Amino acid sequence: MLKFARAEMGRIRNTFVWSFEGWIAAWADQKSLRQWTLVNALSIALALYVDLTAAERALIVALGLLILAAELANTAIEETVNYISTDRHPLAKKAKDCGSALVAVTALAGGIAWVIVLIG
Image (cartoon, rainbow, N blue to C red; front, side):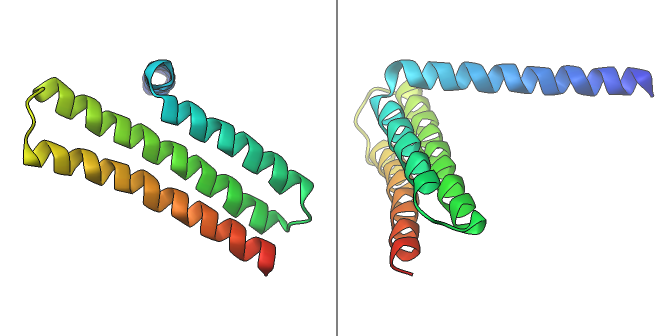
């Protein structure tokens, strides 16, 4: 049992390290990730300032984190497509455009949540 626990702790540590390395790599060359991070910091500050319920705050923070996750997924898609080929191809464009749409739809959800929370 102890051997299993050690192996799991090592796996969890590796997952944390690889995730952190992924964040740092994306942060280094993805201006949009840095911009969305700033937007999220402002959104969280506003959510703490405005009189919201705990559930409303949780929704705002969760959707903000989801936007960052979408941006990271978009980065992964773009990097993979670029790695496979630098040639222009309709399928490569479609993959990149869908990744961009992923971020846009997620950001739209966050924006709509803010509007509903503020007018509700």
